[in-house]
Image (cartoon, rainbow, N blue to C red; front, side):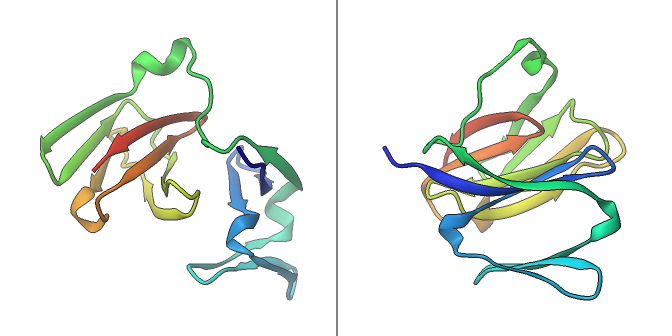
Length: 140
């Protein structure tokens, strides 16, 4: 087991974003914005929208404990290449991580509390789907 550390950003709108330090992000401040750059992404946040940011140690699986609210989220495979997620808040971010903790995809839920993940864009392997504070493992 190894420890992984994440940069966690808490936003005014109650959303939380997390970035693995294993991706070696370059973190800087430019024109009233917090900027995060990796080989995969470049994203910035307005400093006025951030409540706080900090570093946090996470376990090596990235899987959080399951609680009683988990039964509200439903997964449906319509075919081997499409995964539908239902029962998620309309403004939730859904992140797909590979086994090393890298973000492979970020999906926004639609107003009907559903999201679609196109699995054919992912290579075969093990993935973690994080929906709000819940994580699920899938094997492609």
